[in-house]
Amino acid sequence: MIEIPGFSGSVSVGECVVIKQGQEHRFKADEAARFVVVDMDTLPTNLAQGSQQVFDINQPLQSFLLFVEKQLAHQVHPQIEQLLFQLFEQLLTEQTLGHQIDPRIRRAQTYITEHLESPLCIHTLSQQAHLSATQFKTLFKRYAGVSPMNYITQLRMEKAKALLAHSDLPIQQIAEQVGYSDLSAFSRRFRQHFGLSPSRLSGRH
Image (tube, rainbow, N blue to C red; front, side, top):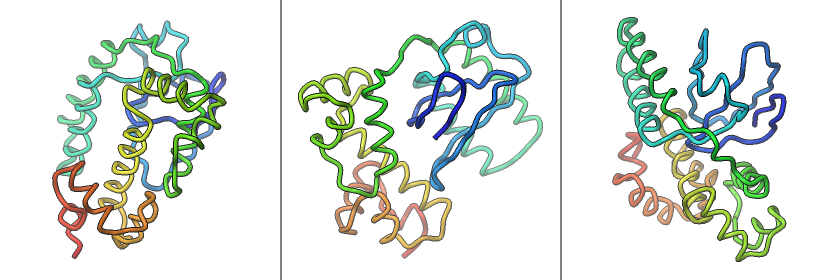
């Protein structure tokens, strides 16, 4: 959850928030959230001149950030960090602003993020968005690029992966925190999503 002038809400996977110099902001993250904070002296022109504060980053930048995470976990080296920053800055200049999510869909996305451990269905989410189930599914896919249920699965798997990598919680408890009471069902879904089991990724048995 982040609050800045002109925006208050959750930020989803693959989104970027621009906080300009001098802007007061509040921020609260889920313990399993993974994000990158970059303090820049100047913003690229496309971001500095734009009024949009939250936008979707493109696939090359998403992939680059995954690489940054791996590199920093492997080795912290000042020269490499400088090169990473320069490449990050260049990739930011290639981001296209203008894709703004419908507030009704963002409201549903916020609800999903805050209730990943609970059963989630189209009926409940469409109520959050104040849309019919059919309208909700159509609009959600238009703005998010995937169906609501695929979006939920993606967030659940990313949160589970983060908890496996950065906490000592038992796998059963992690499964429950992302909405799976059945450990076998969680393990199957995790393997389908990432290509390996939760225990193999975390080294837990």
